[in-house]
Length: 198
Image 1: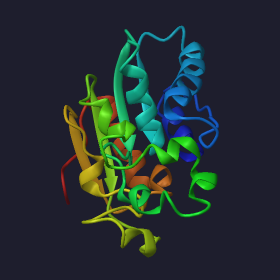
Image 2: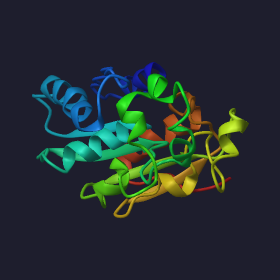
Image 3: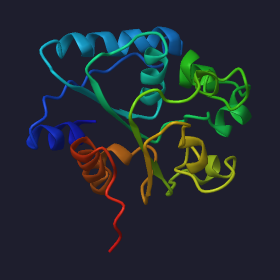
């Protein structure tokens, strides 16, 4: 997230960019582990926005189902598996999948036991960026429709979202993509994406 961090800092945002042990805990535990230290670092902020990639968007949703952030302004999600991913459905029983993806990764399927599916609609202002390019054609064959190599465009969407945009970028490099970074900055300034096409 460093390139995105730098770009947001340049335009005047105070950025808190904290990592979390994504493979060591379930989503319910990770949400508090990731978000509460970040909020503590923003204790003097009048407005707080989140910019997330992939699982990070699910952690914000999980957190906001149980706690309110009074000064929350925007959430921008990059490549979130908001309706889960078929990759998890099809690979979860293969040896090594749990080791590589942890408990949280196992919770990202598309069935009714999936955490993202169970979290329900957004009750906050969220804009979602989806990618339509893949560098992992093997995983893409497991995903119906256009995808970013991990999540289909359709499954990034979330009931109650404010805006959604599709960019020519891949899942693992989305947060470093110049167009995605530009759209994040635009959303944080305007509450919508720049949907104009040249």
